[in-house]
Amino acid sequence: MSDRTQLQRARAGEVTPAMERVAARENRDAEFVREQVAEGQAVVPSNHAHESLDPMVIGREFATKVNANIGNSETTSDLETELEKLHTAVHYGADTVMDLSTGENLDAIRTANVEHSPVPVGTVPIYEALKRAGSPEDITPDLLLEVIEKQARQGVDYMTVHAGVLLEHLPLTDGRTTGIVSRGGSILAKWMEAHGEQNPLFTAFEDICEVFVEHDVTVSLGDGLRPGSLADASDAAQFAELETLGELTRTAWSHGVQVMVEGPGHVPLDEVADNVERQQEVCDGAPFYVLGPLVTDVAPGYDHITSAIGATEAARAGAAMLCYVTPKEHLGLPEREDVRDGLAAYRIAAHAADVANGRPGARDWDDALSEARYAFDWRRQFELALDPERARAFHDQSLPGDNYKEARFCSMCGAEFCSMRIDQDARDADGAGELDAIGRETDLETSAAAAVNLPPTGSHDTSEVPEWPRGDEREGAADD
Image (tube, rainbow, N blue to C red):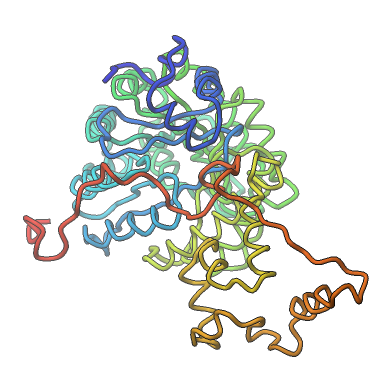
């Protein structure tokens, strides 16, 4: 195992095993992967200590990736539940997960997530620092560095560091509709107001980079002043922080640290592409990782939809990874089904953007499913669906019998009014009409598409993931 980062090795001309694996998953040349990483245009988050990891890449020249936020809160702190969320996220196609736990058993949950996750695991270390300090004012720079070092040793692949929120930026948030909505940003703002000093994550950023270099932790530069409402989008505070993030990107690169940059938030649809393009210019093309963005504020309970609309536009414009939003956003802590729904919405957004951007082979999946639909091959439709279990369940609610798996209609139109049956009958009229028969067949086995643009979702290599004992079988269950 090398003690250098993927960035340092790429700059030295080395194609690492992680880059080889990424190239296979993306159907791209390994040397191209190396070049993108060397230039800072892509990252391969891969902590040296994350033994169960199946490497992946985040960069605008590759398939769009999706992150799922999981984690407990002060009211829900069950380790078993958190690992179930992890399993659900990976099963439904999360490319990375972020453990945003703020409740009890933080070390146990984080360690278990790293041990059992085939995808990169991210964290926000200031959450643990606040938990240990008790209040924002009592956090110390030494405590922040201690927490970051510990989480790096535990195998965390990337960390959100809100180092771009500066003391001089805070007055720019006056007059906002929703103030500072980032948890990390608000914690640091309160610390700076209390001490009258500069952001400790900014002043200690080079020390943090040295920790990240030692363990090959990718830094995710947090957007602590992101807009929390359409009214606050694209304002002076957001863009002042972005300029600082550009400077921090270059500082991290100079240390050999892989970098991605986080983005908004809540943004009107017509401003989404401009936000992406501005970040690419300011941050010299570092991968952009966006939360949503939500394009309207009026739909609590449906924010996986309002945000997936913005996410599709952001990815089409060049965002490299989308952070999912679940139906519970703004309302409560997501549970298993919320994770499932959020991931479905965001896998759709990512795939739609890849199709629109002409990623090699991305549309083959769509064509194969359309062919199965026209042929009334119901079993093949279910097999190719983004969420096969849900597609099958919806069909079977009204037509559950096996005989209906051969039927040339569904319950929407019935046999008499099914347009595709009528069209097929017209084409099969022994040349009596002018319509030719249709006989297309897309071969997904030979598709040039990246793995995330082919079924099934959640196809990560889990061979290195250890078994997790359930319930009373788990040692020390009562001690968690």
